Image 1 (tube, one colour):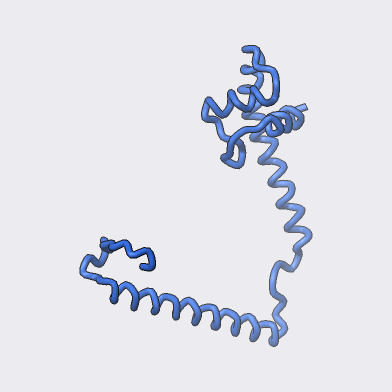
Image 2 (cartoon, rainbow, N blue to C red):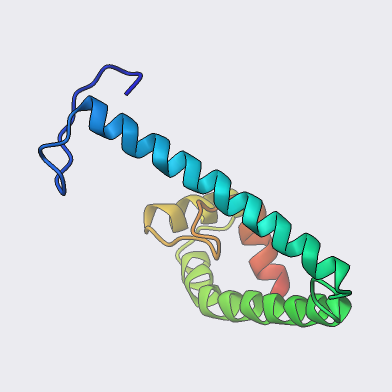
Length: 127
């Protein structure tokens, strides 16, 4: 609204600036009410002696670590043949391997662009 751009709501084409402003105010009020209710419920639970959070956070962290390592190993296993193929074609430096993977449209495990260090880590992980 502050930008001054007029728009039409597809699900409510008859809405004007006033209607949208009122709906936004109501939504903001409801957000605040939800926040207050949540805070009050958490405070009441604490007073009753309810322990909030994971009862075994270290165990959860250890499991998460194992899961992430397994995912990384699996990604490296699946990506290494492509890297080996590029190396057989004469692409040898980490930076050039990263560029070749990017050109092929192959994302990293985090769906990002490849860098020399990323390629180095994949090769190192597979050793």
